[in-house]
Image (cartoon, rainbow, N blue to C red; front, side, top):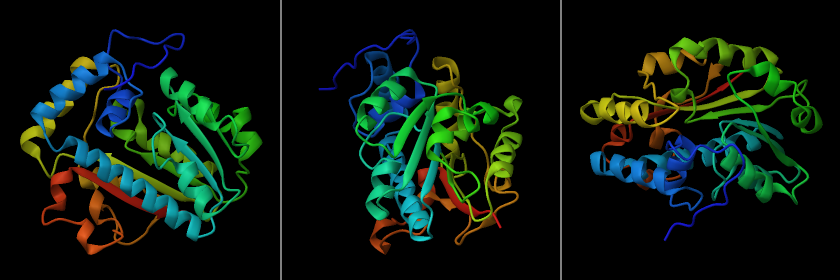
Amino acid sequence: MPQTPTEPESIDLEKPNAARVYDYYLGGNHNFAIDRQMAEEAIRMWPELPLIMQANRAFLRRAVQHCAEQGIRQFLDLGSGIPTVGNVHEVAQQAAPGARVVYVDTDPVAVAYSKNLLRDNPNASIIRADLRDPGAVLDSPEVADLLDLSQPVALMMVAVLHFVGDEARPYEIVASYRDALAPGSFLVLSHAAPEGRPDVASSHADLYRQRTATPMTMRHKSDVKAFFEGFELLEPGVVPLPLWRPAAKADVDEHPERFTGLAGVGRKP
């Protein structure tokens, strides 16, 4: 049975929160009743949702592993969400002991749990900040303490940009981070897309729009690919989540497009 987390200050219990709903999809217990109610409603509408979220998490782990193998020792995870198994710092520090990670999220529950999780890890920290303000994120003490922006960084924007509406100019936001990164840095990105299941994608986006403070904007493949302007896309490009460098052929079923999420990794030349 899911546990009810301790309530940090300034938490809004009147609306579900996307980070906590995502935690529920992954089988976590850092969520409240209102989050579980929305998640169950969404699952009734779209039973494959937990599998999609698991595929997204698996992509994150593969991408972090790849970046570590390419010599990356610094990771900036924007919209990191609730801590759960297979966090960026766990994967990165297992592959490269001493790798440094800064998480960024606006949700007080995500920040509170992350601080508790990271309290004994000198090479990882979290800040409560809005990724839509690159200056505030990049100038934060936590980033200054742990990351050297004159050296390559893996910028993680996994399952977060679909919560940034067009009015917030998401492409300009990504470009601001890109311009602050050293050559050799990576952009790791996944994004909700409607192509695989157009029959349920719009109603799912409507649910987030009506119930949460973070409406969802699904974007088509060409729009997701545009986020990589200024980066060299790695093979196989922008593809459905399970198709980005799967660990084994058995990990990809006959219809990977049904996962309705796109993923890609780019390198700044």
